[in-house]
Length: 140
Image (tube, rainbow, N blue to C red; front, side, top):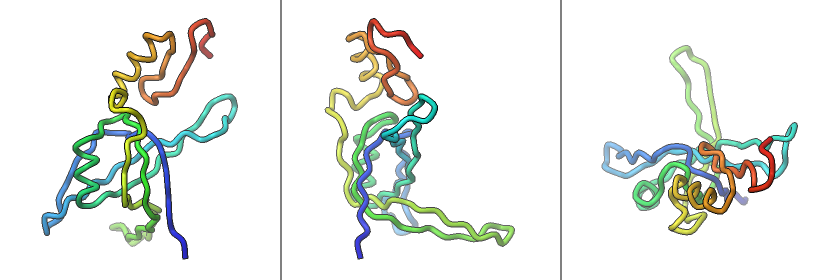
């Protein structure tokens, strides 16, 4: 059987490292992954849930900030639970085996990335990091 996942996207929130009762580092986060096609002239994104453990969790918490582009290599795991009303739920989560930088260190902070783009006449949506318009083009 094969269960491998590779996703590249932007971290949607500041990472908050937590520890289990056995003092094992764990980090749950999500990344926004832009789809390769547009719907009604807009590019949509999917939000992928990711869990990282031990050194990988510590690495993400130390080196990544909200908006940073990252590459996650891992595997899918189905989480199942029953809520207080007895209703069963499940969701798929990527368990990160490795995480890599998706852009140069200079661009890891989205605010710095936006400043870099703006200095080159490129307008960027501050929440998604997506290019909105180039100099000389009208914004849609």
